[in-house]
Length: 77
Image 1: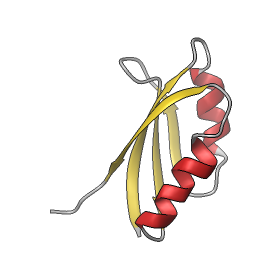
Image 2: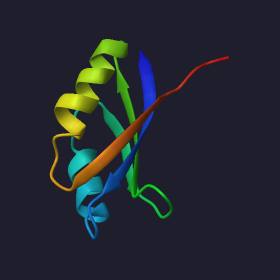
Image 3: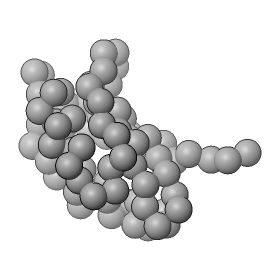
Image 4: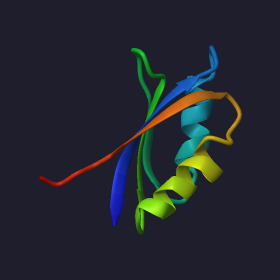
């Protein structure tokens, strides 16, 4: 299992709607609107890194109101 944080910049005024929309996606364990340089932070999980990439590209990035994403895979050191 691979987990990651996905940091999202939204269009102005869209953070709440984007967070609610993304929270319903299979593989997303948490989505919250926040303040700062990013508007929404998502915690996601997938079977492997390729599945995580598909989740981010095919499901998250395609949602209305998203301007940019940054995916940060979680590592266990």
